[in-house]
Amino acid sequence: MNVVINGETREFENKITLAKLLKELSLEGKVMAAAVNMEIVKQGEWDNYRLKDEDKLELLDFVGGG
Image 1 (cartoon, rainbow, N blue to C red):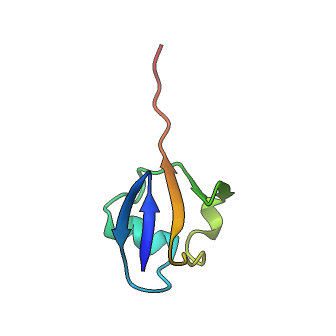
Image 2 (cartoon, rainbow, N blue to C red):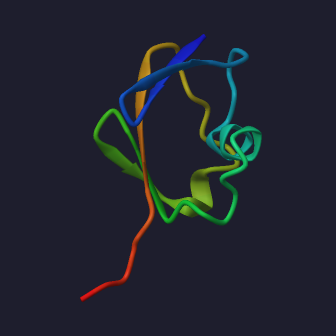
């Protein structure tokens, strides 16, 4: 199945969870927020949240600055 991540289409196994996708991309602990199809998914739901074909995923990390 295809998932669009921050504008880039990537291919993954069917019914992958958000947590597993982050692990496969080596982004565990680096992502602070995730939105699927413009809806925020709380971190506590990432282990059980199953992505679907053509979902649009936005991954955000907060950067401090001045």
